[in-house]
Length: 326
Image (cartoon, rainbow, N blue to C red; front, side):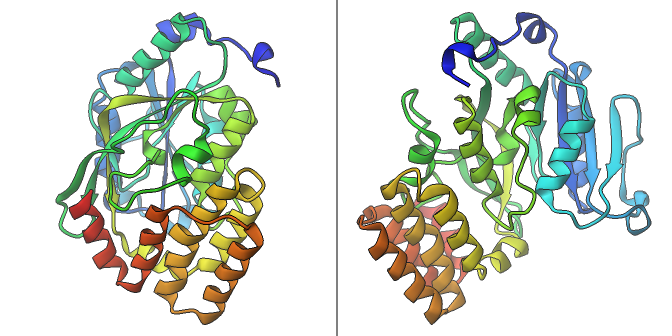
């Protein structure tokens, strides 16, 4: 759809926004904290919360929950072990809001998160712009083991108005926790856009980047609040084990990034795939990265090279280092 044909943001939607919040969960203990942070929103009366349990009914112990279902807070189930992308799509479909926001069960929001992002949407709409809107914000990063903040107000640099999402997220990524990012729990999106462009449920990793790239391909415009409105937990055991899976990263980058931008692909190959290869100590993976770099015929940027070779250190040490150098 061309820019001139994209639907304008509805002023009535912004005057009384009903926001659907989707939290996928596998029953982590932190789920109660995430739900509490949504109910503490200053716009809570204009929010509905859909908790999507990615477990079969028989496998989920509701006794771990500190909250009850209501018209404003619903719990639905997948068939079990369908993945975060499928759970988010299910929550979007079940929602009734004009907008949809996503929150992971181990992260949480600050009380003005939704209100400040709706204000950004109002400002954007008042300017007369007419495209589907994706609104993000800065975050604080919290270590999953110590519960201490490892970095505040990240990313350091926000996306420029004339910058593509691929260029912003992938080209010239700097070492440190403050590098360019749009974490899933920061996102507020027109729900109609989320219905037209669902999450790719089959992906094993990079689901967030994949979705953002496809949103832009469908004409979305990105805006970011300058304030940090989300606390994102980093350094989980799941992220450590995921680092061993370099092949799925290589496959995704070749399919999604390679056709869009050679430099972005080169930087992705070293910052992501090479780092995972070195963490896995895979000789075959190293050969594969070199082969794809040669085929791509573009030298990667210096920052992503540094990130890539950080794979020689343990993932835990890498996360600590990122927090130190920001």
